[in-house]
Image 1 (cartoon, rainbow, N blue to C red):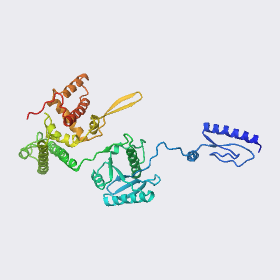
Image 2: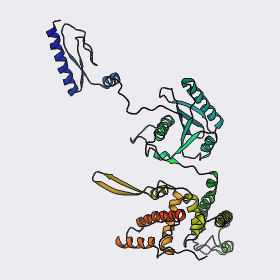
Image 3: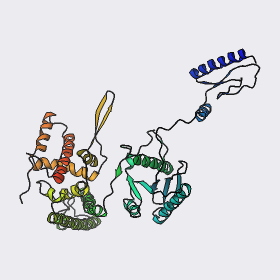
Image 4: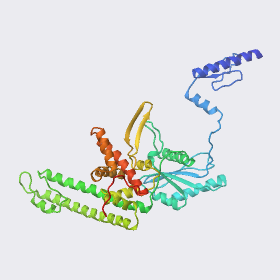
Length: 446
């Protein structure tokens, strides 16, 4: 083929490539120049054939491109492991140095700590055989029904362990997304890698309480459960009697047994025999609950008294404020104020009282509080905020609430009380940590 002809064909091919790029097609030449399209074997015709763009050809083009230099290269200095926990099995997903960035997966029976530690030892042996070095193990798992005992066992074995808030892990926002233990395990490993690289706000790690701190808050939580059961039994008793036309019976009064014998139905008859027997058994269960509540409250008061005698702890300081009794002081202390917080935003977020703005372009609105924190602490603070207005009417916080309600024309009291609860939590935190007395607050008389 003449040199001039080759130059002409080369120019035609370049023009065809430009047109194919604009029109989303691929080019094939037949003069010894090959592209990613079909190759025309007719060397005499010197024609250029265009191939329609498809998914397969696109993947081929991407796969044939030379690899670009990575902006950030990371050499693994540890074995990163995630645990997907369930009652039946534990899925172990690991990424080890020298494994070619391939994640391995293994399964052990649920609760088999010995098998888990044995699998970790095998991972370290394989990494040492590949690289000739010893690597530590870093583990991550989600906070859930398993509590904190697995984290404590791993730390006792010298293994770095992290517990992550599952709601803080980035996931696909598709309406229907795939979810399996395999996908979740790999996502946790990637989250752990980003966290150890120091990427900001990649996830929220849970600070595990000590066994003493975890056991201390059992009293308040058990009392809450017992109070809920007591309400159910009282409502059931009142409902049974109301179906017979009986009103005004109070099961929590001490004369409940005597009053039961005096009751008459709405049409003047004594209570039916089986109904009276059922109510009597309900009263037996109610009295058992009342006795258990009394025992729990006695233990709680003894714990608070010991704190007052030992040193001026958070619980003792809270009890000194008018309007805060043993129940509120115990919940605030055991559920939140025993922890360390760097600033007011952290403690408000922990209680689920942090704001959640929605800002994008011209859209700017507030969605309300996040409700993503400790629900027991948040509920107690809302109740305490209402009582604060009654017992501390001349405090700066109460005056702020009244001024804000008047400004809104007497509306939005429930929204404003949530804002007051957040301000009250921050003020109490400053009081128990730095000794800053709430402005205008009245203390109890010793």
